[in-house]
Amino acid sequence: MSSIISIKGLSKTYAGGFEALKSVDLDIGEGEIFALLGPNGAGKTTLIGVVCGLVTPTAGTVTVDGHDIIRDFRATRSRIGLVPQEMSIDMFTTVWSSVSFSRGLFGKPPDPAYIEQVLRDLSLWDKKDEQIRTLSGGMKRRVMIAKALAHEPEILFLDEPTAGVDVELRQSMWQVIGRLREHGVTIILTTHYIEEAEQMADRVGVISRGEIVVVEETGTLMNKMGRKQLILYLSEPLAALPAELGVNGLELSAGGTELHFDYDTHADRTGITTLLANLNRAGLSVRDLETRQSSLEEIFVDLVGSQS
Amino acid sequence: MNMRAVASIYHAEMARTGRTLMQSVLAPVISTSLYFVVFGAAIGSRIEEIDGVGYGAFIVPGLVMMMILMQSVSNGSIGIYFPKFNGTVYEILSAPISAFEIVIGYVGAAATKSLILGALVLATAAFFVPLEVQHPLAMLAFLVLTSLTFSLFGFIIGIWADNFEQLSVVPMLIVTPLTFLGGSFYSISVLPPFWQTVTLFNPVVYLISGFRWSFYGVSDVDVGISLLAVLGFFLLCLIIVWWMFRTGYRLKT
Image 1: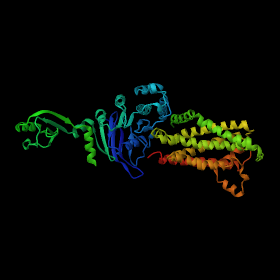
Image 2: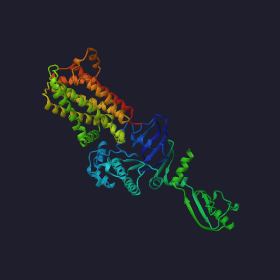
Image 3: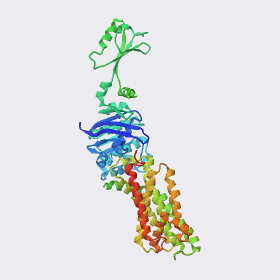
Image 4: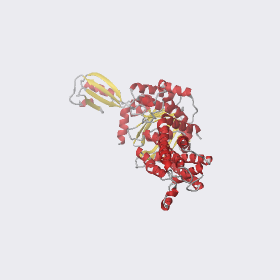
């Protein structure tokens, strides 16, 4: 995978002295969906702002498709589309003129057929002559995406695209993102819905207090960082853990009716066989059992929690 | 040069004027016409000629200049302040467009609006008072240069302003007094010597004097000095804007 965005030693200290980014190194591969996760104030928006030209970096370099974002700003910015987190849009223009304006601003010749396609893809076509202020919140957000796509960018930044958006719109947004990926567009998004990152992203980066904590393929991260848990539902409640069960990572729960056992699937021996054998020997009967894998959200909380 | 981006900004700004025709065109034309009615026709007939020009005609260049100054500052400032205020400036800043191109788009549109309004006011004035233009080229030069310079000045205010109060404080507290005291309604030769000297520190005096010269061939200060003064202020504004974009002042964090 060749990298389309290369960030090296990027730091940003704001005028008030707040260090939003601390020597960040990050490479984004061409055509991937990259999810940048992090708590509020972690530096996600600052990072995006630097790459897009909204924030002046204090130190470090960023190249986009081999071009420096400051020296060759025309080359880098013309490749990038940005959907910011805030609803920032001129309410008094029509959808059509707002999206056409964005295309012109990025130096592209008018292409009504392309704009029509973008508006149709985002279910905005029948609203094209409406003033933006008359649209619903979700529709306005779609217009912002249409504006970011108006100049046919190769890279799309989506800062919290699904925050405060209803389920239906979220799903249609993910469809649009999926189609863009099929066309080879690189997508970098931040989201609070970690489930979405889990489902959509090829790779996940976790940022906390201005530092990249981990960057990993989503599946690998889940395997590596994720824990599995075996839950045994007992027929009779226990007052205390019997000593003869003899395995580590065992916990009595739900008023003594459940046994929770954390285990590592990658270990040579998980301890499950021993546990089941010892249960049998102790004369305990099991009504039901299930296994659970920790979600990306739990991994995220662990990672960010260990930082602070 | 990203000419398409410049054209996009320019057209979007002109379209904004089109949407607010009453406020941005009709209102200033009517308010200026009231000056003609009151000072030109009603009171003007009782005031003696100044430098051989009837009072009603004498105030026309000053009123046109006043209109151009105020409109340029207000259009130039709101053009860039509004995107800053509603957040849409992100799009301008993230576009492959240089500071110079942004300035051409916004300031060009603001100056165009001022020129259109100036022309309308002149046309309106022609209904009320006899007008003559002795130096049409000089008149045009003063109009264009003043519109550009003060639109640029407005643009600086628009970038500097953090709220609506700051946006209006410079036009209200600086531009308006300077314009009224800049000889729109009188020749500075009627002032006592001390105040004549003080007045020479008011840049608007040079604008109005030079502009009036292009009409009637009479001026308070030498027309060459007038032209140099406008050019000097234009260059000063350019340098400030250049510095603002270079440092990202109040635009980038």
